[in-house]
Length: 174
Image 1 (cartoon, one colour):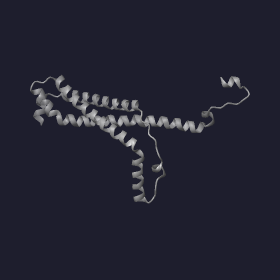
Image 2: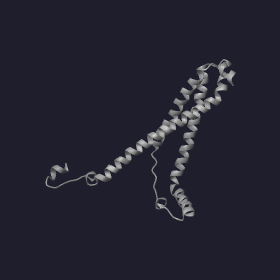
Image 3: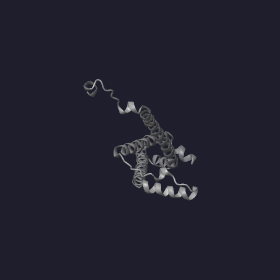
C-alpha cells in the first residue's frame, strides 16, 4: 500500500482531514433514514385508516354478498383486489407527479421564488440555486412496492376483521 512505500510521509484520508464535515454528513444520512422510516410509518397509518373507511362503507355490500351465498374467500378477494388497485393507482399518480416535479424543479423553484418576492419583497437564494436531480429507479420502485404491500396487508387484516361479523347482524344494524 501507499503507507508501506512512503513510511516517512504522513498520509491522511479526506475523512481524517475533514472529520467534522464527514461526521456531519454521517449524522445527516442517519437522520434522513430515520425521517424516511417515519414517513413510511405515517403512510402505513394513513393507508390503514383509508382502508378501514373504505371497508366501513363497503360492509353492507359485503354483508349482502355473504347473505346471497358468496364465500368469505370470494368477498376477501374482491375487496383485497379493490384495495390493491387503489394503492397501485395512488402509487402511479404520486410517482408520476413526483417525477414530473423533479424534472421541472428549477421552474417550480423559480415560480416559488417569484411568489416569495411578490409577498415578502425578498428573493431567496435557495430557490434561485440551479439544482440537478438524480432519480434512482430502484429506490422509487422499492418505495412503491413497500406502499402497495402496506396497502395489501392493511386491506387483508381489515377484511378479516369485517368478515368476522355475521352478515345478518350488519344488515340488521344498517
